[in-house]
Length: 424
Image (cartoon, rainbow, N blue to C red; front, side, top):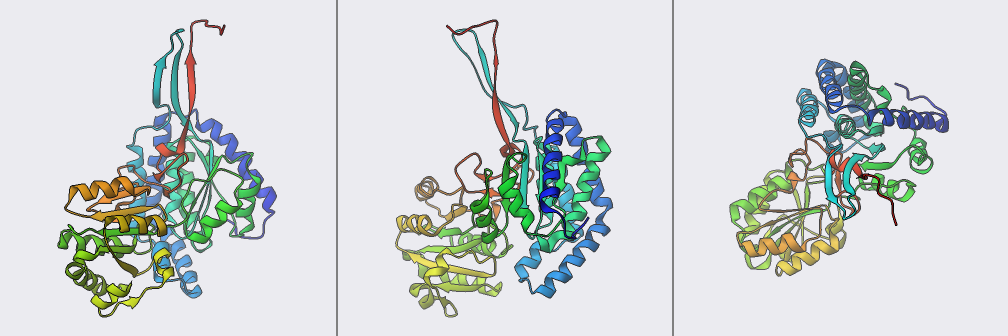
């Protein structure tokens, strides 16, 4: 590990050249060999728990000195349970079907040609992320499973933690004889390395996946000369329809907002039908405030909830990532859908309703990557979807949308088999 001044162009170019070479080798590796490397990496994570915790403690102390928010500190913090979750996550990825080589479609032409559309790796993926050091393991494992080489660039605040985890992933590769350069990490905190990756490495990097806050995602989308899979922010909504069961409404809103406030699937805005606001809001608001959540509401909300703070226009489009929620009373389901279309980020939205027709209308009309009925937005997670793990939630409409797991890190090619056909 190094964090000294480096020649950015020389070092980043070397990473790119090595990754391209390694990706060609990895694409030829068997499912069994890739899974064996993942199994060895999981063992290395468990056996290196203390070293990872020591590195994380260094990062945590520096982060507290810098005054990072509680939500950011929670993202950064590792303990025995979270390290075990990383190791278990790798083992769950092993159990996934191999996404490479899948026959996505097959047909025969009248001239006798057999045509298959077959899943193949994307090639080399650059992954840029912020506080969460566990992304190092998840991202590397998903790339390895899907046959992709990866260049990782973790956040400066998690530099030591991420590097300790990265070394475990490399150990898994080395133990099975796979080129360890299939997984590489940018060896500096210098932000210029990110700029070079985005602007000058198209020859070696096929796609970039950013995972982090609004400023990081925007920078990547603005500067990248490489295709990007990602989302700008997670402004997620829970809509309480007039038919909502009160206990479900209370429990889902509380979980969606407060289970973990610093994740992109945390609810930031609650919408409530006017017809049931008086019945639902007091109980929902009480549960939130007892859990330590600040409520910002429109005029109708502040009239019903004594300690609610008047919301501003900015609140409806704010990703708090903290124990703060905005609440708005809407006239009907059409108004709720219109609010989400205006202020949402296309990430995750949930409707709480007993009326199946209302639920189906919401699920059909809300154009977000993930829509739920009677369930918390915090289920917006690849692991919860049975995908083993994810790199992030994509909100775009090109290539991948929703949780980006191993299957979403593949492209395809056409394989055509003939018996001597020539085109007239």
